Length: 106
Image 1 (cartoon, rainbow, N blue to C red):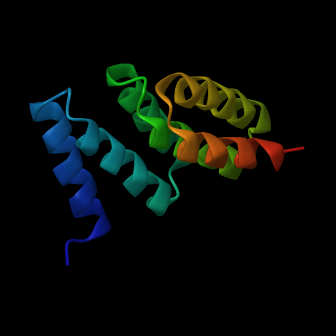
Image 2 (tube, helix red, strand yellow):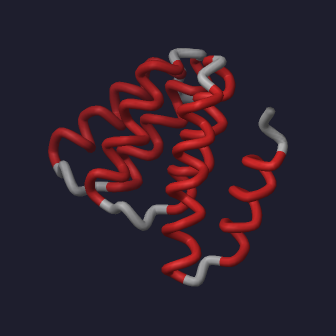
């Protein structure tokens, strides 16, 4: 099995070769979450949204990451933006997940 740092390097290489590769950026963000490097993770979730602002899962996982960082205001903001996007795109399932996460915040 590929070690965590190796996966990060593979995703970085893929993202560098094709800056529009959403899956490489998203995979990189998730690897940083798994590693516990939340600052780097939210940067890569934002990189996903910079390329595709309709990529709903990035809003959810970015919000979750902000929660892990203790930044509740940022989590609320990203969940809210995700709710707007998923309402516009008709992604009811992810919208419900985002709303549920937002409702759990203080």
